[in-house]
Length: 429
Ligand code: HOZ
Image (cartoon, rainbow, N blue to C red; front, side, top):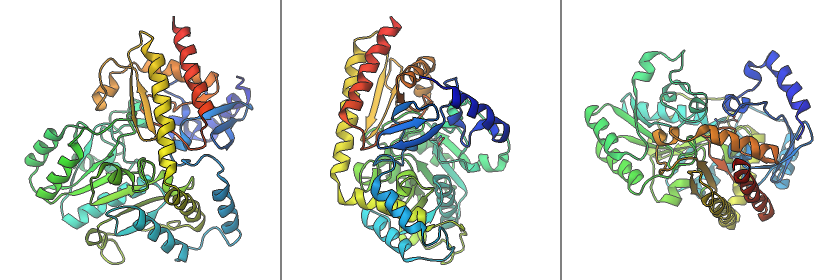
């Protein structure tokens, strides 16, 4: 692989963009080397500025579930763009989008569109606080809910990747109200709630975690949170930015059979455009302005181009539920293939998969929380990352991110990836 143009672009980017990137993990800081600059993508493949082709396992960190430049989405965007790209006034398309979401997702009576997952989580927390009149929030170590001040405490994703423990610029008053517990540890949450009786507004959780690699909730964990929230009048927020419309048409709520009070969305909901949303029980959602006084707004919220991209994607997922079966079958095939190869090596490894989310932790013990994820062999993951990149496979440039499969992936792509794992093992001998 040649990287001359990407190298030049990265040098140039650093002159005008902090660190040369608009989102930190993309800088390859933890895996090392120069980020690959992407020129275009089609189906399951990315093409960089050096004419290298990669099998894509990040799908833009989740949104491109149907593959890149998916024809119906591109066509819909082109058609709508002719009629202007923004109005800042209501449209029928926003109603259709909201109706579609409400129809697909259990337990969402009302939904408000925003422009990112960060905005969705930030707004959901404000709403939970406004609704309950309480301030504190419990989040889980290694979960990432976007970069709003309240959530940047023991957060996963880019913070874990870059080993950022404390974020300067966040007033102590804000982070003091954020309590943390280990993921999958219900007893710690029960204790935190008891120690902060009548002070917890919300518990926010990634129902399947994807920001410390992929981590699966233990049986009873989410159910226990649900019960606790009911008993203690706490708003349960599922951050479904990664899992929403990915694990099933109704997201993790449907797939796992646990209902949250509020749910946040991003990624797939925008079909590759900047979209987020939060929704939930009518009784809570009616506290949002203009009905209630919990203020939240956005010039580009419900933007027509973003809406049509998301609407077209969701509609296709709703009308073709077999996509979820196909995605899961491909992911399971990949997991089994890699598992077989790695088992023959001396490398300690754990593969966590849920639906079309999957990741590898190089560890000799199960990985069920952030502490266990942090004890993995990160250097080995970085080696794997570069080996794969060199051979035309694009994995997330961080051991702390889930891989997301897209439905354009063919079995020959998965086979190639599995063969490369064999080659990787050989190169280690
Ligand atoms: N940390 C983000 C995913 N969990 C990465 C977003 C990006 O760089 O695009």
